Structures are given as C-alpha cells and as structure tokens.
Length: 251
Image (cartoon, rainbow, N blue to C red; front, side, top):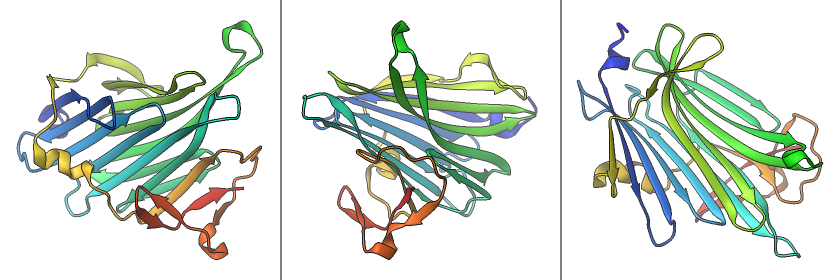
C-alpha cells in the first residue's frame, strides 16, 4: 500500500481469564521498525462489568489513553440492565466531538490520524415483537493509507438473564468513503495466555484521566438534549475503581 505504518506493523491477539474477569483480551499493535512503539487495547468482561482500556504509544510525543467502563445492575425483578457507561480520556486530541450518547476523538500517530469513538445504538422491533435492544459500540481505527482504515470494534449488550456480553471484532482493513471490509482479519498471531508484563502494565494500571464523561446512568430517563454539564459545579464527583475524578453528564 505504500505506507510504512500499514505494512510494518505486527498484530497480536492474546486471550486468557482472570479471577475477576472470565474473559480477557489484549489486542497489541507493534511497529516492526521500533518495537518500543506499541498500542495495547485490553478488554475485560464479566457479567456486571466491562472494561475497555487503550494505551497508544505510537504517538511520538504524546501517548494517548482511554478507559471505558460499562456496568450492569439488577432491578427489583432480578433482571440485568445497564447501570453506568463512563469514559475517561487522556492525551492531545486534534478533534473532539461530543453529543448525547456519542463521543469521538481524533489524534495523530506517526503522521496518520487515529480515531476513537463511542456510540449508543437502539434496535427496534427485535425478534418481530415491539421490543428495543440497546447496545454500546466502541471503535478504534488508524488511517493506514488512502481512504483506508485499520479498525477494531467492541459491541456491549446487556442480557436481562446473563448480564453483560460483548462482541469483539477485528482488526479489519476498511477502504472507501463508505468503508467495506477488505483483506480479511489482520491478526497475525493469536496467543492463549497473558501478554508480556510490560505491555500488560500499559493498560492494567489506573491513569489519571484529564477528561471523564458519563454517557449513561441507570434511571436517567429520557435525555434528548446535547448540553454537557460539569457536575463539579454541584459538588458531585465520581470514583472509577478507586480513582476520584470530576465527570460530565448530558441533560
């Protein structure tokens, strides 16, 4: 493709389980010309919590980090429902787009654009009955050539009986203004077990988010506006697994 970033990258997928998360994944990109430059995307899944953590060290002077937390909680009938969807971000972003239930960040890596976005989707009339199925989709992509992206995605759903479940796809290479799958799955090596300690440490530890967004809160009701309000002004704070931060909610 004539693009060193596209042709000189190693793609590995690690799969394992831990005491807290029965499903653990780590998708790791490594630049072959400089193996100190990596991008690690870690996905951890159990019935009531999903963590998606990304540490991107491709960026020359400004490592970029994202952390998504999705929780589920039971209602008075014992059914699982989405509890909270929270996204933290840290880095230098060229573009940032924020709307109700949608976030998009763009940043530069190796003179190419990378994009990270999160969106809620609602599928109507599921199973030919008048039901709604809500899911949250997270996508991360690199511009790797002319109108070409290398993209992976995570779709998080909440089953009322089983709790949270995810679909993890990619990375695929997409091409065109309306991106179509091309060239098949880009994973070069799939490993059963944890990634090397240093790579895992990139995303295993908490980081101090510069921006934290609350995309959904159980019981929030209908929210049709797109205004972002800082809850710091009202004295409300949030705690992400022991990390206290200000956050934002859409009202």
